[in-house]
Image (cartoon, rainbow, N blue to C red; front, top):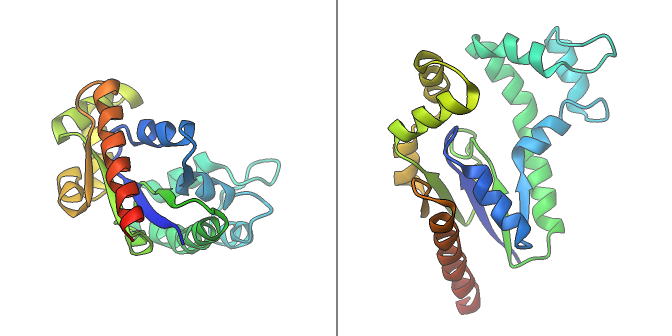
Length: 198
């Protein structure tokens, strides 16, 4: 049976760099964001539910992520409704992925791991961390937004400091890539040793 490791962080902390490293080194990484996007496709059983609840179709009867985003961004009730449709689907697909992945280690890349309580699916959680000041700076630069907008985005997630306290393994991404990769390898070493011991 695979050991399931959740990977999370907060917006603009560099989590995708960590998951990319794992993928290129042959590890099984299941991506919750990718599954969320699949949930919006016509083939998905979420499609009709979403279309019934939200006025979000484009001219080709596809769900417009832009329209949907505008509806839910400023309305917590609508956001909660959308999440109540998508999150169970994501969870179901992650479970299927874990079953299909025959590797000793399976990584779940879930940005809102704690917010959606998907940490309950994991044996351990790896948190990619930068301090809030660095996070703010990176987010403003990456998204080309001002401080107010950046802080609004950050406020919609559990703070990175809180996540740092909750995680089992902390990957500090305040330095360079080389330093980041060394930390990832250290965690992998510990995880592999634990598997051998069990």
